[in-house]
Image 1 (cartoon, one colour):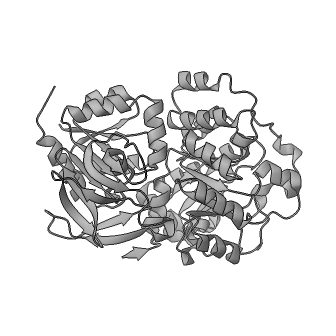
Image 2: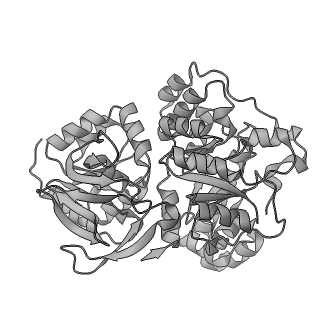
Image 3: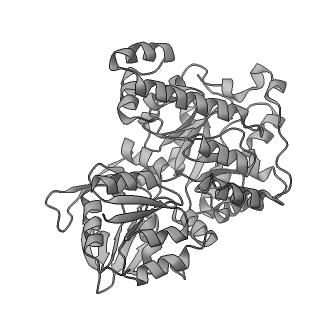
Length: 293
Length: 194
């Protein structure tokens, strides 16, 4: 009997496919998310848009919040650790969190090294903007990927950019001849063996969710249309006018992302979505996606 | 050709489709209840049972699925799917579909870090079966009509009650298609009702 194998870690993410993972900051929000049909919740101290507004150093959530959320729901609970913060990740693992997000939404603890995620029994999800970044994280042991997007902005443009880029690069690798792969690995900064595996599988070896800017049911459906395996919604739900309606509508739009009449129907009378932000209004230092490499 | 549906609301849908096709049957992803009419058997995949239940209610799947079961058509539930099939659930007053005569406990092996792989001896299979358990449920007790097909550490993890097959683990996550094959044969030998 083996725990923490790649199959067990990656398999856990496979079970989340077609679903919505929602950021929550307390038990009440977690219950609302579960009730609305979320496949998992991400326990946080603040949602990304509030982290942005608060400024300063953003760290792992207070373990009391994580525990409160774990006790409130039966769906899996994820939590964020800072990039490279071995101890935060170990603390979350010891608490029994089901998945850890090594996340650029928090202030990085290490600007050079990401966590060696293969060392842990708990699985990890990491953000990526392109295939080089995606495969470096898988190489370190990430069992699930998500786009970085630009968290807390309610602007889908960066998530679209990142998902399209990764998928275009995957297609390129799949169609390459084997003798072209090493050069591609060098150009992308990607582990050679992983590119070979992608070529053979015809896809990434782990699931890739959309994250970072999903604010409406249509945004979620768009990401599914572009090939995301599922959707993370951070600020989009609890910063909207009517979180319960938004949560339900985003879940439905994710399942039936090509049923446009349904999406039109559920999008009516939702109230106002979170206020969005133009990406160009953010200086390079304020873009969370620039954290990690 | 035998046509088998995979409930496509959420979870490991693609993997089951691949496995069904590898067994030489045709697979249909069921996203709308009316599609149930097209299939001879139904697999309910692994995923989040709470989420699937919400979507089953939302899209009006419950009655059509019960009708499907009453017609004697075979159903196979893996992990979350087993929870949906069970007649009784530990800690819950009401089951979901409530058609398979077993008592099931959710998340009974612990949280994700306790998830594991293990080799099982399965009744009817010559070689051991590598099973992947993820936040898995188990069958606490089975009714008289239910045949226990595999155990792990004294817990029932695979059983069959007539037309219903249920397991705690995820056959769809490995390349071993023997259990899917077993189910395809159940479907092929089920009494045909058109």
